[in-house]
Image (cartoon, rainbow, N blue to C red; front, side, top):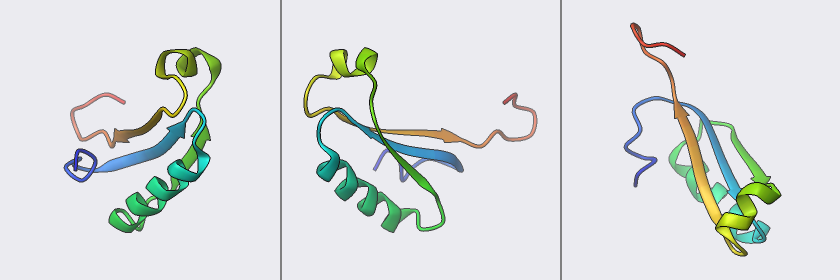
Amino acid sequence: DFVKNAVDIQDLAIVHATTPDEAQTLTEHIASVFPKERIRLARVGPALGVHGGPGAIAVAFREKAHRGMRD
């Protein structure tokens, strides 16, 4: 729901620590909500993985800048 409420998405990614199948399922679900967006799927690096731990999964997105806003 949080991602659905984003105004105008520019970039969208799903990252995971050790759960590629769950990340792929989440990617497919989000793709059904945002069919025009390219969704990146990646494994987190060690710096983030140590804090998230095994099984961590996250959705990351960036909204497009609007007039008067800086990139």
